[in-house]
Length: 231
Image (cartoon, one colour):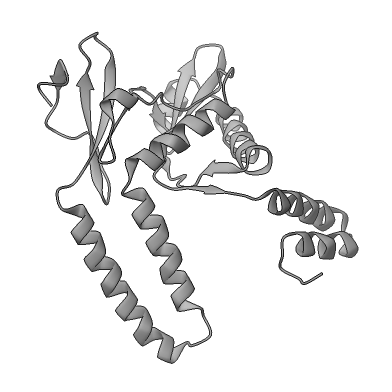
């Protein structure tokens, strides 16, 4: 890292299940976040997945109708995708492009020349975690306004764009205060993203409309659109 970056803090500022984040600075002076995978994480994940499969095979004897094989396959697909930071980078770029031109929602810029399948370098953004209520109030951020912004940003991703950030815990959402103006919502950690098909998007909207208006026919039609009921 000392050869690639002008500065690189060896002490991580954040950590997760498969990697940790370090603060660094490029030769040009820009501050960046460098997400690095743990050594031998692939073999550790493989061992965990095998153990999980064995546990599920035992549980399936007690609860045979729960689709354990499908559940394990979905977990394995998600975990293995998370190991490839190139997929995370692509998701960040796509979702960031969907919010291009907006100042109230931001996805950190990916620095591709400093990233690989095991290292992801992005723009560093300072902000307040959405769960830090005291800091949010001290910064003068309107909590109702911030809440509406979070909901609107997720609705856009799910219902309009069809790809969304699927790990919305407080550590992955930041608020950047702007005195006298709306805050900026920042999304971090795109290791878990998901896509919604056009049919599913249309069906969810129709289902909610039917639920609000108590229109049973619309609800049934929506469930058919989403594939929960055969046509």
